[in-house]
Image (cartoon, rainbow, N blue to C red; front, top):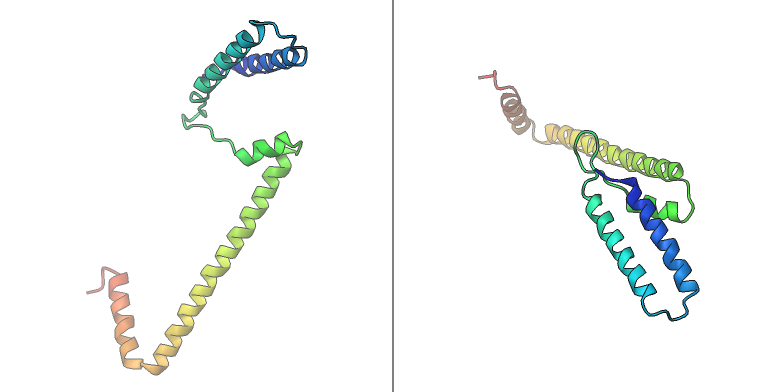
Length: 136
């Protein structure tokens, strides 16, 4: 399971590295040892990442765009709301296209019925037979 202490440890390592780099006086072993600790901490965190599972056992996925917006100081709820609105708009556009295709099919069917009445009767009978398997 994922340990939140890994994240806290990483943040502490980053703060320590920042302080060391700010005040670096050329001490021979301090910076490389802290970088090694930081590297190990990152490796442990990456190893724990694969253990992130939801209650139903599926892996947890995080939207990278949401993380980017949070880093920029945006509200995650605003991001979720924007994604929902854009999904709703895309859904409405898709529904409109489906409805347009249905209308086109109905119009073509009506025009074919007037232009080719015998063929369309056979077509309609064939469709009824294939649509209902109980019809002989």
